[in-house]
Image (cartoon, rainbow, N blue to C red; front, side, top):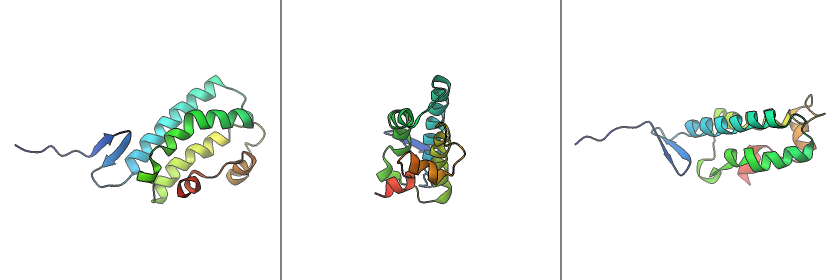
Length: 119
């Protein structure tokens, strides 16, 4: 009997790869959050800071933070994949689109996903 070699396995919503890197999980989490973000963009055309916080907390952030204590990405490219979702979604809030990412976070009273994982 031979054992089948697999590259990626999903267990309890977390993707494990044979090389023990989290890139696959980061990509899947970002893709799921991106899909939800697209649906929210179609449903809500004007976002104010209060609606953004509600929608972000309820629909997007859980996908980006699920089980982070176990898979906390340490490679810059994995952090960038996850952080880019929040970068894009903060641009949807009216009146702050042209500001820098750090300014948008300060206005919305948020932290980067990386710093929230390290707490």
